[in-house]
Image 1: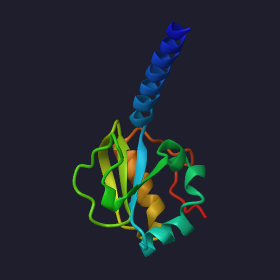
Image 2: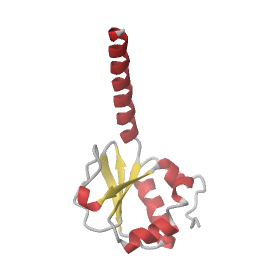
Image 3: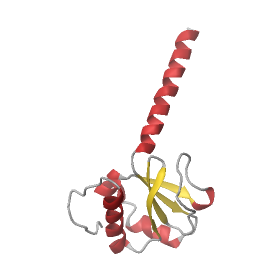
Length: 133
């Protein structure tokens, strides 16, 4: 019975490690925020509910990080984050590009789409930049 438990444990660890490395391999959008950030709150109200339903959100799922705690484990920023919110595009654990600040929903979507098109193999299904309310 101990051999089966050991085998199950080793298998579980290997599956977890494979999943963890695959999870960081895909593009993520890290939203660096801090408590009482009014622009973070605006993003949450104006963009947050729609984000996971969009092509952009499906391609680069959102991962939140606290400004004071540094990057999430396994992620490296190209330079220090100074402003909140800052949106860091991460692929294979490395920063690819970023948007500093939140310029409002009318500007956020085109900036994000451009960021993804220039730094990944993202292809929007709509082919146009639109506001997603």
